[in-house]
Amino acid sequence: MNEHVPFLAQVPLFTSLPRSELEYLAATLRILDIPPRTPIFHEGEHGGHLYIVLDGQLEVVKALGTLDERLIGVRGPGEFVGEASLVNPDGQRTASVRTRAASRLWEMTRADFNALLNRQPMMAYEMVRVLSQRLNASHTNALRDLQEKNHQLTQAYEELKAAQAQIIEKEKLERELQVAHEIQMSILPRTLPHLPGFDFGARMVPARSVGGDFYDFIPLDSQAVEIVVGDVTDKGVPAAIFMAQTRALLRAEAIRTRSPRDVLQRVNHHLLEMNQQGLFVTVLCGVLDAATGKFAYARAGHELPLICAADGTLIPAAHGDGQPLGVLDDPVLDEQVVSVPPHGALLLYTDGVTESRDEQRATFGEARLAAALRVRVGAAAQSLCDQLLEAVIAHQGTNPQYDDLTLVAVHSGK
Amino acid sequence: MEITAEHDGPVTIISIAGSLDALTAPQLTEFLNHQIEEGHSKLVADLTRLDYISSAGLRVLLNAVKEARRRGGDLRVAAVRADVNKVMEMSGFTSILKHYPDRAAAIDSFAA
Image (cartoon, rainbow over all chains, first blue to last red; front, top):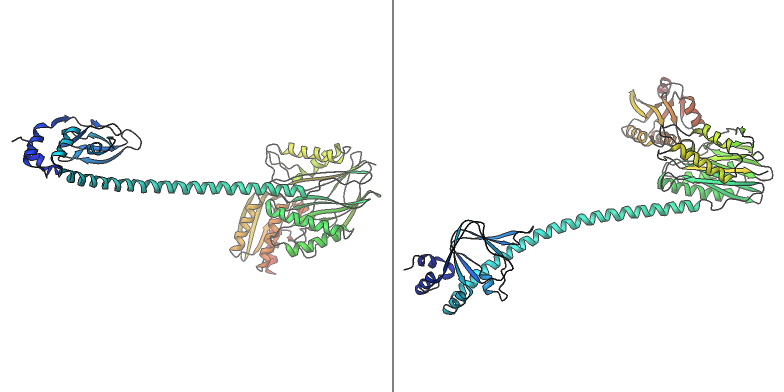
């Protein structure tokens, strides 16, 4: 009896074979001795042999040598590998196999295998049983792999979605701010008023996309225009909305009365009824009369106007009383009258101009603004505003702008 | 800007030093809100060392006054420097906030 017959009788695939068949196999099968970590065959190649492990261990590996390399099984003595390509119609190896330890294998050719099946058709049942077991195990593994991959994918997808949502939200916000900026700039007067003997200029630069500063020119008749400069003491969207309300109220009230003091009192009354945010606004509002050259104004807590004669002399404006709007039921307000000197200028501004700081944190200040005005008093009003704004920006240097800047100028041409 | 708080009986004295403007106003807002929420609504702002105040700074004081008064207290200012006083006067705040020449007088005013 061949020494290998008792071992072959233990191989599950061969349990149904008669002894004579086992004797025949033991005598005809080729024995291979393979060192450890040696490939037997590779996934994808055409396979012509089945191997039965006599001794040692084989590793069955998918995607060998790639990042996705995966050990799908280990076969020991009595087990076999390579059956798939013998039964697959295309004969392709479905995985790679290499030795783990030094191994002794029986090699069976395709012809041997086919002849054996012909002689012993019952063996096909055992073959099917083993194949179906392996298929099952492989399905379970594949499913587990798939679930794990699916979980990772879902997680990555959720993270991606969250990041994308954030980007969309940010872009939406930026777009809305841009729209708000455009709306705010568009409600500022688009054209400067025409009044015999005078020319006008204005600049407003918000510190953020939208701001709380505003100015307005409201024509009252062919000889008079109401000029308004205001500063809501905050920045950003709430201030911009409050500013738009204030400006609309000022427009509506300015055409009902010629008294700037009454205009401001009425606007204050409306604001108190609407304002829940604790915002307040300083406003300088006055009527310029072309016939007299006089500017009659009320000042709700706002900076005083600067008046400069043609020779550069500054003419002090009366201080008077004035409290901001949106705070008190009955703010103290009075009216003052100044004259715009012949070929001189009147400058209204917000505190963002005087509070603009340089790198050393020194403010631009009223003195610097007055000095800048004195040397440019001959310029047309719009050019004057442009030049003063340039001076403020030069002062600021690389320091960021903290507050909105507004300059409104009236220049007398007679 | 530097802010410190001390307590004298029921009165909380807040010393503000440096420059109170658009840049530093949020810091004071947070500080005052915290004090008021903790139940300290009788406040004295000691402005001995305050060099500069802008409208943003005035707004912080105004909102604190409103909130303190709503809770039965007040915010009163003491030792206002000439420059700062000029801004307060210009913006009509001298009649909104109660002014005292020094910290002691402001503290005493709450006892009356």
